[in-house]
Image: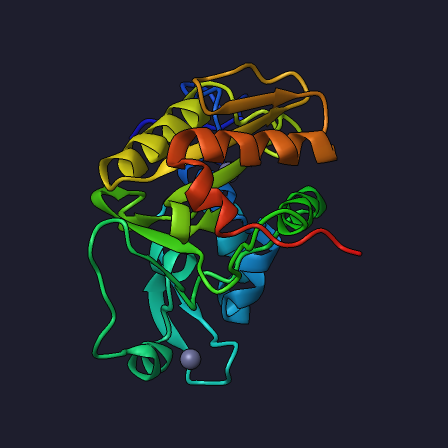
Length: 251
Ligand SMILES: [Zn+2]
Ligand SMILES: [Zn+2]
């Protein structure tokens, strides 16, 4: 078996004889980033005897014992299942709605995906909400291909009425992961959304370069950035569609 050490510090020690050093985060750290979680949050969801192993795990398919935040019985599940949806069997049974639409492009609420939002993301949302109505009850979009083992993606902010997602990228937030594979994963997510009729507007801050016509390149997050996002929305979907969402200026 080949030993691999990852840039996030997980895997084999880089000094291990015969080990291969990869310049990217381990799969688990990448999915944590994608779903806006921290390792500490994941560890706290594990049953206490499993915590030390979860803290250093690199594989998405690794199975552990977890404890349900709602107080249900401990259950066995993969890291992937815990990070991408409700994973407690009792919670899944409770959440099973008979009429949930699962078609491509449909935005919905994945109750298991309680995302952590950074202060910058909250500020971006607040700036947008001063301009247009942005719903809070949705966090996933159904797509037609598999993305991290799921047929859905988890953008930062969703505007289903326009079929537009907004993502905030900066080098600090991604802890150098926006280079290389992370960039490829971003593009894959944008493509998966494009296939189901969505556009992704990316705020590319703090030195990140444009990756396409929907990139809003800026030094930092300002009200002008929000204006540019709304202007881009109008270019993509028409003034009428955006005007229908506008909130009246505060008086
Ligand atoms: Zn890692
Ligand atoms: Zn539960």
